Amino acid sequence: MMQLTGTLVQILPLQKGTGKNGEWKKQDIIVETQAQYPKKVCISIWGDKINESLLQVGKSLTISFDVESREYNGRWYTDIKAWKLEPAGGAGSSGGNQYTDNNPSDTYSDLNGGADDLPF
Image (cartoon, rainbow, N blue to C red; front, side):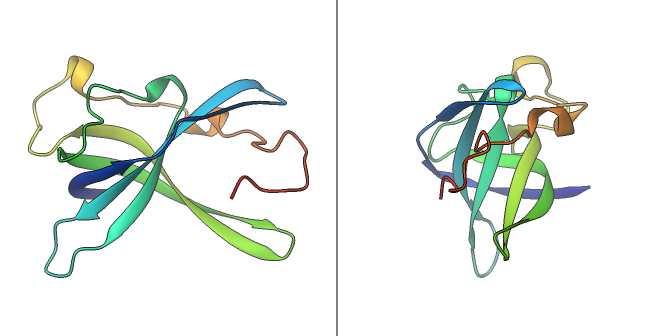
């Protein structure tokens, strides 16, 4: 399991669309790690697992995630996809303060709807 703890520093605009599996939405956030040399990381949260109550700039979060790369037109792109998000130090808290996606692969569909250009 991959996990990081960091401070939410930016919330990017919510992205929505329709693909071959129906409607989708994605929330990208920028988290700064809590290390000697902090790094900023863009993390994607998908679908109905987006929890706006946790997404507050300045909030410290612990994020469990998967890393996935894909090839497009000879170039490789890497995504960090959160599957669990909770307040830092929140071990023992549950309910509305976290989410778990037991089958994350079913939410990652063709984001481009077959179009030839990527959204980035």
